[in-house]
Image (cartoon, rainbow over the protein chains, first blue to last red):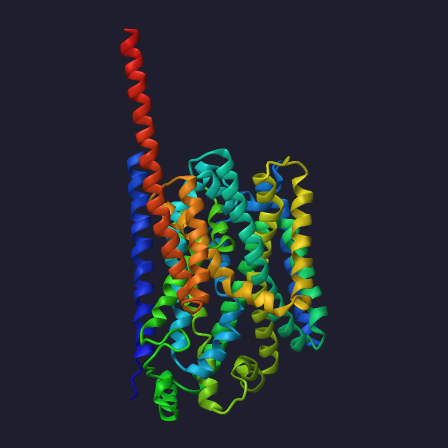
Length: 40
Length: 490
């Protein structure tokens, strides 16, 4: 199958973005819960 | 007839949303209501409205044409907007939202003026420069968008471009003047849902026919450069110049008033991390659209006008009723950007100019409505009657000039608070560097704003350090004099 460096870069960037959103969201929620726990 | 029916239905929804937003954001302070939607924009509306504004009609009409002509590089170029808008939004929300509230800023020019220390005169001057630049540069951008949307609507509805421009702008004026930024954001959200639906329908139609691998192989047989380009043409001569679009789009998200004003209007307790998954998913879906250009190139490699790639795709590869709906959503993509730009221009006209000149701030609702109407009328008149040479010159400087002008006092300000003198000098030199790199170095539209922003940012840091040092040494001198006077008294 023909390889395209452009399409490969697109796929890598898309995967990185999904991972980024997962990390940011999880860390944000974790920090929120931690802060709420401290406030209680 | 079918096209008119779905358009009228969509217009009715927009005006209804404008009315509801007006009811929701009503307060005694009509500026808070018009300029920042009374801070009622939540996660879902906010995320989708930023996406709708950032991914303008270009993604649906211009980008498939470029993909048809230059190949897969455009798919990567368009995709660069996705991480840039998401990271830019998250970053700005973390840093700008809180500070803007502390500084009591309703608009970006006002935020710049309030967040820099300096004399009252200098603060008012930078407020005025930022407002005037917003009005001039965004007005030209507005004209270009009005022209594009009217041409598309005139083909779709089979009416003259002028009538199409008047009808569509009338709708935008009605809901923007009625509901302010909350109406703009809510209608943007609806439009973004339409854009996402059309991107998914387009992907479904294409991948029903061919797989991505088959498309790449077929294009490779036509011309290997289409799938494995050795340069980033039309974005630059080097292979990876396309990545500069990320820098451009990041600066565009964080500094341009019609994007960044949204960050001032979110709910006070909104958590920025909750925007990220929605924006990532949405931006990745919208990034599929340029594949239309590659698909059409594979199917019909000898088009005379590459810009018509999307229109031909809708005409020949899409069922008629779906094509009508997607045409409406493409109009939405353009209208969502126009409404945000119109709101920013009107805000600077009705609020910033008056505030910077020290005029009385009474009758704000009349001023706000008047400014929306005036901006729209000027936009329509100039779109069809202005000398193209003059407009072209301003358009070339356009948004890039605004990015260069505002990069220092907004973007660098996040990390390094500075003085009004630094903001003033940075604005002037940033814009000059942008103009210089366009006309003397002959840089492209992606490189020029990055150069301008770099010059503006560096100037902001250097002049800021110098003015703070001067201020400190003056304070030390004053303290020494005080000590000597005290000693003499003693």
